[in-house]
Image 1 (spheres, rainbow, N blue to C red):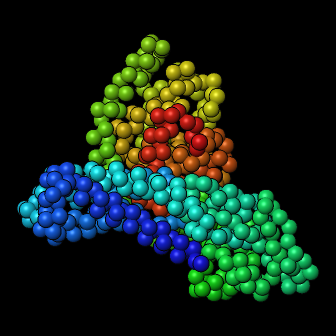
Image 2: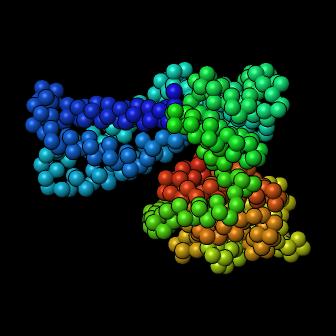
Image 3: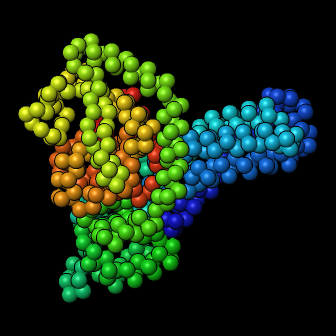
Length: 474
């Protein structure tokens, strides 16, 4: 019945799929290399090598996070973790294939063919499973949402998204009434086909049990009623029902940290619990490696863009630079391809741009839509001023203004700014203080969950935007 059981069950299914894919791929590789007749004897004589190989690949998947299932396990995350598992698998293969003992236990040609076949087969099997097995009714996560306000509707819309796995089904909204106002208890209305049940704190547990709920989400606008229910929710949790408060639900399903539900203690705990020192070093290695390895691509594209800009604006410079606020509020100069007419800010001064800014040139409009104007910032990454992924750096004037008007806005400066970021791939284009506050919710979530896996997901989403030309947040 428990939602946690759902998550563990999904992890087991995925591990079994990997194991099946590994066995089929390995057997196929042996048959292709040495023939069907000699296959049984070869496998038997090299059983120790096969066990090491299978164990190594399963370990690589574990390290890549393939079996670390969360509530919002989207198909896009599946591809990201699959890519990470392939990277780890190649590393494992490289180490073992050049180790003398392992090369004797298992041929390098068979190893290489096995990993190639496995990489394709595992992804195909997982996608088939996600479209068939994992959407069956017996694997549905039966969810009760406490509250009927805007947050409750927002959370319902997210968890019933068909791209979210496990598949969630909201079976009821629950309103908690005071004991003295219980005349309507037991009665219910309906919102979009889902029953709204009224109950008291004392009868809440029984209602959840009777509905065989797997997950309970608190979606009240405030925290006062939450505290009244904590003891009951803890008891349900020990009985196997997963529970999430409003803060946890918004983070888990919406991928952002709600500003109105955090305080100084929460922010301090976020920093204390994060793996910033370790991840920061790994990110720097990752940034430099990716920037250097992709240099041919971004330099080639950059040269083409430079020619286009010069052909359309002969007298104007190709590049544009600005002072931006970096890590720990250190100012640095950022580089971009020019997208505005020369002297566009002489009259207006530093202001937000919007999607239909008249100061933007025709070529600049295309560059902005595909984010190609940011390519010169790879130089900033090599210099150490920026990272590939992180909160976008603001101009000092806007940064100072937003820091005064938005709580915790300065927290963005604790990490390196990025070429792209979680807010950029999750939130549409905005040019108001409210938009900046909404983006900050995604930035804080990113800082709290800082990892190379999340960075890769952001990079892949950014590539999709660049290739398709989607608006930010689409």
